[in-house]
Amino acid sequence: MRKIDLNNFQVARSETARDINSRIMLNLVRKHQPISRADLMRFSGLQRSTVSVITEQLISERWLREGNTGQLPRGRRPTFLHLNEDRGGFFGINVRPFTTNMALANLTGEFVVQESMPTPRSADDFLEKVSRRIRELMAEYPQMSYEGIGVSLPGRVDLSSQKFVFAPNLGWREEDLKVRLERATGLPVDLENEANACALSEFWFGHHSDGARNLIAVAVSEGIGVGMILNGQIVRGPSGLAGEFGHVALTEDGPVCACGNRGCWEVYASNSAGVRYYLESKSPRPNRQTRNGTSFEDVLEFAEQGDLKALAALDRMAEYLGAGIAMLLTGLAPDVIVVVGEVTRAWDRIEPIISEVVKKRSFTHATTRIIASGPAPQPRLRGIIALVLQKRFGAPIIA
Image (cartoon, rainbow, N blue to C red; front, top):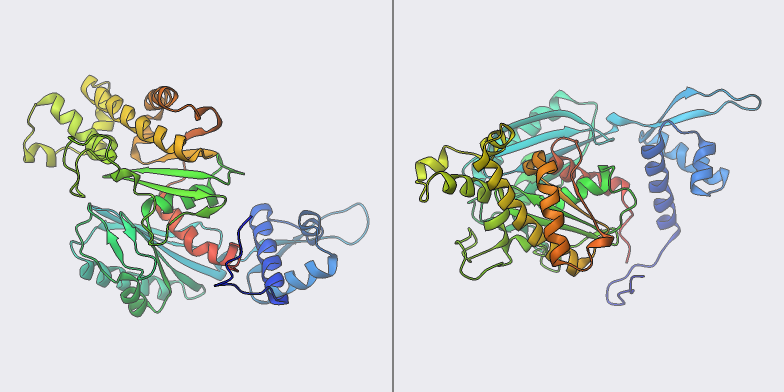
């Protein structure tokens, strides 16, 4: 139960209850469509008149549409309701150090358009290219009512200023991306770190975590990010910097991290670490040219072909992943921990290693499931779209 903040509260009015019930109807249709009004009554427990008023309003506002008529042995035949998929358009942009992916999604979260481009070297170039492409897509799909843009960044966003302030693997300086992108497109913009986007993706679209109220996503890429949903709410902290477990030092005398510290978790368990392990097994001191010529995708492919050095690199990476996950599990004891990233291609190999390390290091492991993200493509993109979608489908914000 949340404590009421008497310094910042809002009394509940009749409009609040109506808004909550309206969002319940939208979510029930989203989950069970096609669905009849009678089934909406049964699932929600609301009276027939209330369901009728709300659904008619949602139809008039074009959030719902009526479909086929059902068959019954007797009585009035039901008319099924669906989400009006093209009623809302949602842009998602996932920025990574080398590649930026972008998608336009409809009201169900399905991608209408998906494309990628090399990540621009500066925020100025990024804003110019992305805003131009968004305006082009809005002109190509004029039937949509555009709800907003979500941007996933490989770092942390300050909640008060909405500037990204910590992205050591990206190389951009602190930027006011939100305001500048809003001015360029005319749409509201929400910034989020990639780990929180992964957590939102699993929370809204995942099938293995249905019913979980406490979920942690470990996003493994060039670095490691951790997104936390506890009691159904994203945990950001007062500044938005909560969850930087990738920069918790496992050893004080380890390799230098991009953040400037030594021995951070991501130095040992990220994709970059996996590449380093592989190259070190081939040459004790790999030069810069060798590093630039080998990607983590290469290491995965070599491992799939039976390369023993690539397999050993993945095993070592998995041991350190297990060490960090044990820390999360012991401290937070969530329902589920979801590992997200290219490394899950080797899940059959690394999962037993992770589980064994966790079992040795954490006495609370028995109650938490550790799983790989599902087969849905682009979890960061889907998650950042969920960030915008939840403004329509999530519970309204009240004190």
